[in-house]
Image (tube, rainbow, N blue to C red; front, top):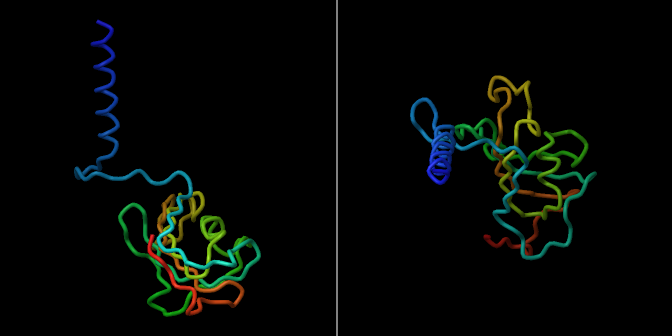
Length: 156
């Protein structure tokens, strides 16, 4: 009898967890990240300098909402990367943390929980409150030093 009760409990738990992954229209949804997730997409073959707090960096990026993939901003369309100093609070915390130890030419995908992005306030009208964000990033320069022809990327 205990085995039957255990089996029923497991089936019920699985049904509840599956139901939580389906929205009102019946589409499966992913749970937003609860911590910063860093995915390296490209890495330079030669990397002698990595980003650290206090470095002035230039970054190309495309930002989307984790919930539905809606693009809310991109430097690529403007043709000008964003310049900022790492670790100085000039950008969201997810960037200050997610772009550390990065090489010029490296590409990363950052999945950023709401508390490391814009939190409860959001950034209306494009970023709602408590929104997790996804950024495709490419580091173009550290302290004015950009990619040279010897620093060719390899796909990971």
